[in-house]
Length: 305
Image (tube, rainbow, N blue to C red; front, side, top):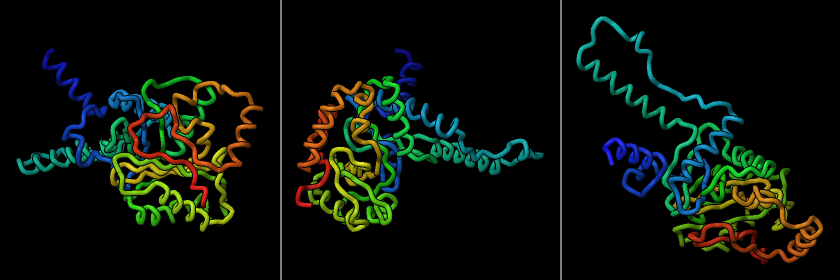
């Protein structure tokens, strides 16, 4: 293989997230304060990242128009004066390099190291990730057109905090207000998953969040069959990713592979099943279409809540 081909492969690996080397550490890790899209995949993170860029870019252009990069580069023509000494020339070059770096950081999408296998995190800038992901799934559900091979689920992340119960509840007290605080009210379910993290007890977290939602407005009610809203709680190591989404059941748990499939059951059969499920208020099982590397999953709230 030629040196040119080797360099090309290295550049692709760095861009699309292949490998778990040192270059992924530091500023390119999922951190508290970020927003974006959490994406699970089928064993091929590099291909998943490439598909994610394409899919997110296609629909972001529809919603927000073509991406306009924010460049901090100055006008070289205006700065051309008689002569520059060596120090001034070096200073100008450093500023241009800083501007180039800042432009990269302002890109609409940027792949980050999530901290878990078969999971990637795409950081977003200047857009609403929940609106974008819902738009994607809505179109896929309507058209039934498959647009990815390795992406499984796409979950928006509109808030992040430290993955400790005290921090999570403090953050959620304000985070959940737009949907659940009086006069707002809705039926809801809670979906919790933890990866590479064992310091939180699943049922305790869910019960505490349900109690918080009840305090915001007693009219908020649990519905595991067809909730208006779903509170998604995804813990990866020390970071908790949060979002509140609509149509979680309709869009097959935000699974882009499943949402394009035709509904197999008849309306009458689905209605009977819904009534039976709603009367028991039991937690859902794990999604059979999802990868098995996660440590926990739970939907809804314990029956005692």
